[in-house]
Amino acid sequence: MNSRGWSFADNKLEKEFKFTSYFDIVNFANEVMQIAIELDHHPEIFINYNFVKIKITDFEKGSVSQKCLLFTARVDAIKFTS
Image (cartoon, one colour):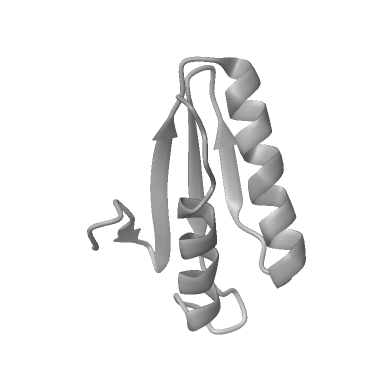
């Protein structure tokens, strides 16, 4: 969908983030959680041993909204080492 690696499926934006350490995965998920709380916009987060997949939509609108785009930009700004 865009150059930042987010794709669009089932009225949601989604992206998979790869990691080499489970510790980094948990830290990343915690940072995503903080963004969700700040924006009051909560994604689906799938955690595996070497990746995190995030899906976001605006359930009130039934599709992707400006709030979703702001959320994805904030998630992309998280600095991680993996």
